[in-house]
Length: 249
Image 1 (cartoon, one colour):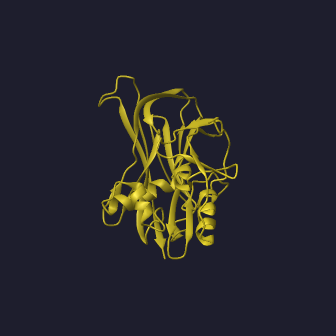
Image 2 (cartoon, rainbow, N blue to C red):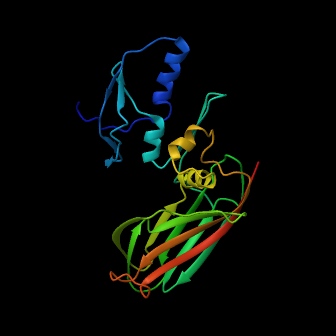
Image 3 (tube, rainbow, N blue to C red):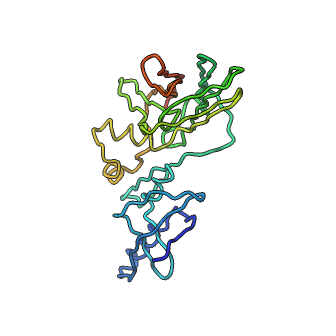
């Protein structure tokens, strides 16, 4: 099967087909096939056990699988037959809450659109790491360079996962690295707190897997890096800044 290289409209593609077939009570004839998925001209990893579907010369993509490679979280409320998609956004927005820490010429700053969010609304939090010095700074780090930790009032904490491959980033004076807190990290917090480590299994049984429950939270932005390729206790650094947010019903 020829590669399918396209930006697909994720919302509803497979769900629409499934809902139509179910409502009509009829069987359909379709073909499953393997393919490659490109998003913004970048090849995305696509599991061998997640084929695409060709029905009436249209390609249907499993919504949750496609959303996951975009950093989104998907839930389904079987009772109301409602699909929820939570996705990170790059939006023009003013912060109403922020905190910063500076050390050795680097500044990390965490910002939030607001201090109090309603349950289920997008939580817009982002962080910036910038070179506030007058000299170029070279950092050696995993991926991402800036991650986020989520801690609730009970003391339960869900921390950022980092890839172990080593990256080198050069920051000239004024250069900045930005990172957005993804809904997938709220999903991870919710699943881990319930002792579930299979995100698909958790999402299957949860209508709003990426919605933070009512409560108070500390959100911490962390830049984890080394000042040398020879990584040891003398060269490793962790630059942190945190804010407190509240989620109401």
